[in-house]
Amino acid sequence: MPISDNHHYILSYYRTGEITGALFFGRLAKIMRPGPIQMDMTKHFADEAAHAYYWTEAIRRLGREPLKLRDSYQDQYNEAIGIPVNVMETLAVTQVFERRVINAYARHERAPNLDPVVKETITKIMEDEKWHIYWIKNALTGLESEYGKDHIEETIKRYWLADKEVYANTMQEHEERIDEIMKGKG
Image (cartoon, rainbow, N blue to C red; front, side):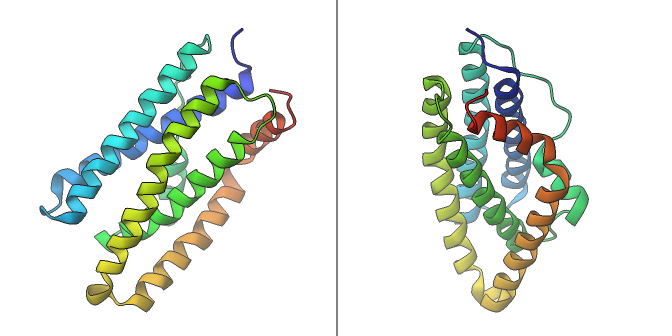
C-alpha cells in the first residue's frame, strides 16, 4: 500500500533538503584549499547525495515517486539570515542545521506504526548525521586559533537563534504533517 500524502510530502521534503545540502557542500569542497576540512567536506557532500538517493529509493519502495518541491529548508534559511561569509561561519551554520536534522529524524523515527522502509532509511542516514556533527565540531575547534573560541561560540549562538526564528516562521506545513504522522494518522 502506498504511503500517505503526509509521509509522501515529508520524505520528499527530506530528499529535497539532502539534494540542496549535497550541491552546497559539493561546490564548497570544489573551491576549498586541500586539507582536512576540504577532505571532510567532500565526504559530507557525498553523504548528502547518498541520503537523497536513499530517500528517492524509499519513496519508490513505498509505491510513490518523489514530489518535485521548489524549496528546501536551507533555501528559506539563506533568505532569512544570508549566506555565510567564511569557512568558520559555514561550519557554524552547518553545525546548527545538522542538529536540527538529527532532531527531526529522531522525532520521525519515534512515530507509531512507522513503515520499516522509513525506519531503515532514517537509521542509515542518522549514522552519517552523527559523523557530520562530530567532524564539524572538531573543525570548529581547530579554527579557534584563527577566529577565537568566543567568536565561534557567538556565531553558533547567532545561527541557533536565527534557526529557531526561521523554523517558527516557515515550517508550519511541515510541523502539521509531522504532527499527523506522530499521532498515527499518516
